[in-house]
Length: 293
Image (cartoon, rainbow, N blue to C red; front, side, top):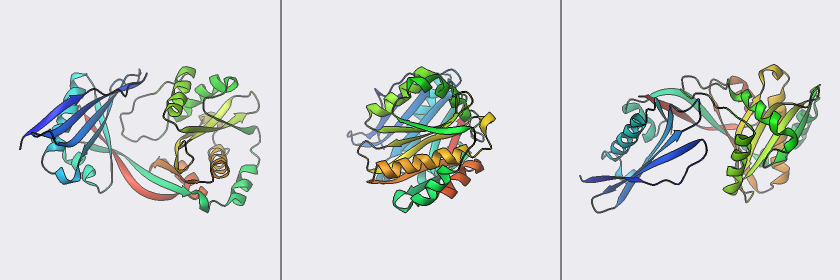
């Protein structure tokens, strides 16, 4: 077997990460697979890389995936990185491949979907209208309004203690520039970012948020990007309240949208209960794997 691994130039570069890429091909130039390694550049995540390896099903078990993996891991080591993470759906060839190559399982994720046609709007409205004394809901599309920019960036620390089990994820620092850059990136690819927040009426600060990304055409499935409540505001049902309002808005604004997707760590029992009560049904399980360099 003659195999060529070719490094490629990858234009996917942002203020917080960049990617390296490789193409695997046979001697005649026929492509058989690829690998992408994202290297994070933020303080708090400079040790971390994220790997994706793909080999055409007809070409598997011929060593192509291993060669691509070796090229990526070698680059991570040369760059002084500490951890390589990769994700694979349970029971797939990727799951077995990562386990066989020395990656250890560090996180289990349950993926779930809510078919919007099945949503009981009356029950949802009843839940949303239940008073949460001291709080009110606000929402916007796209970039955060100026009046909420600082407090919204501050509310992102609600995700700091998100269950990640044994994943060497590091820390992420958010400021107004980063919040706005993330919204612009979603807009640039043609998708729509919807945000619902719970506002503390005592001082007008944001106590929690939930984000939903909808395909630009309003068809297919939307994707939840994150739901978090600041520790000092937990215990008031704000997470379910915000997510219910996000579902209601999606159902009413996008009649051709099929459903909403979410993924939750199995250890995040609180968010899994919220998803269950809102009607999300599990679709599959994936594992986060990690290779310690």
